[in-house]
Length: 498
Image (cartoon, rainbow, N blue to C red; front, top):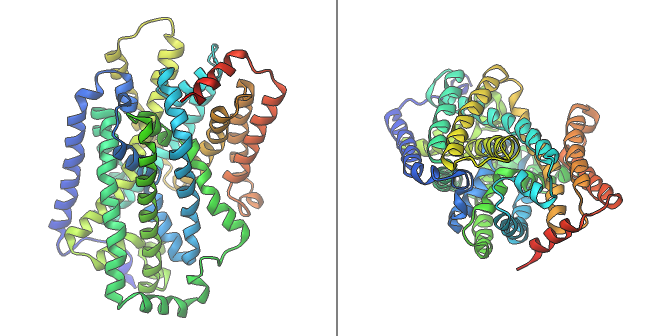
């Protein structure tokens, strides 16, 4: 199997490179197109001035939450575990439908009335955070997990460049960072959302057509299923997993209401009444992408029954390997673009969230809270902070490549467990207090870290589940024993007013 130890582009390399370069040209063109609009003010730079189209919101929300984890991680998971991997997708699909339908409208309504641009903005206004303590805690949580998240995306890009174009992985990491930096700095939220929308189509094309072509090439679905049953009869059974694994898979969806790069999409839509449309489109897209990823894992197992047949014996290399074996070089180029689409659609959004927490929440709202800062100055500072965050994430990605991949689900869990329960209770329970939210934020963060680093706990249940649960209980419990100011009751009425 030595010939399969690496994925290299040989015949048709010109087609592959041309397809990928064409993809990059589209990205940079969108960045240039969006630059003028995003330079108008900080609201335009970070949430598109609350003028985003419903289709853009729907697609950018779902693809920004998936990252390379869907294309490389879920396909590899389905290869290793079989049809039971579908439960890893069910959780987030269901949760994000509810977020679009109910949670998003309240967040969008309140954020417009109180001119909230960031997640900390919402919490600070909702709980009258005059001394900035709540805002600071949120910013620290954002920066810790977001820098880790962005670093992991840069490393994923480096792996993709190394396996697809034969470049050194460090070179690929730097190229990935440079590409994301350029169009994010230029076009801000508008560029990020528009590129995410384009990338959503790249991902769908690659995820849907690749398994169809591969199944046809093997002689049909019955042949694929027969091959899989010969390997392991339980491989095609979606219920063939333990209760702990099932809860862990389903629980992945609990991260969605806590990841601010998803929540910023809800705040950006031009008309909150259009969120129901976004729910339908976003859910359809989520189902199609997840279904394609699972099918790729299954048919890939039929093609390559031994893990040693995959490059580096790494299941995350299944997707590009199967594509290289099945597709014309131009279509293979689209697959490579789809991998970068998944990486970039997450990293660019996270960079904006992290930058907004520094410029809006620390500089504008705390350090210079009594001064009127020109909007164009704030945009300039925001662009500078994006550059600095890319440099920090790049350094971390280059020096810590061996540990950075575990940070993906860890960061998803940390954000989900801290921001998720507190934001839900803030939106739906009028007795929630500032002290309760702080307790929930700290509990979610600390439990996530402790659970991850204790093997007996980590090996039995994904840390997001207990951390989310205990964060919810901490927020509720502390809120019950602390007094709710009248002003917070008024703010809650603003949330629920149609």
